[in-house]
Image 1: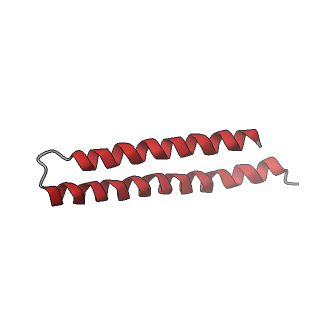
Image 2: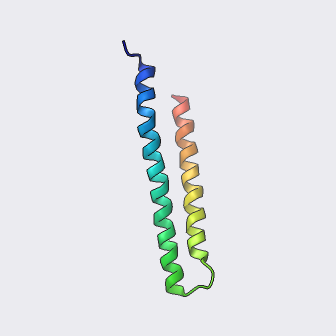
Image 3: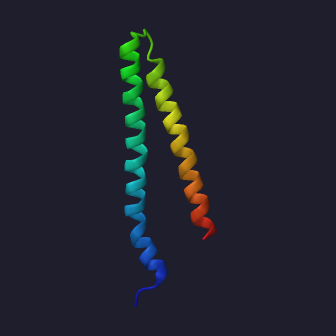
Length: 74
């Protein structure tokens, strides 16, 4: 017989995979936008690309910690 804990453990890999794709996708989009801004402004150093990376990485870490905290409360 299956317990509710067993069902949650089976769902965990798919949740983690989805979170990983979301994390990587958001970072990729922000880096691409930063790259295009650097290209348009002809910057010698990729300021916008790095800014997009750090902004998206920080934002996604915040959301990940927030989701984890909310899941632990339940």
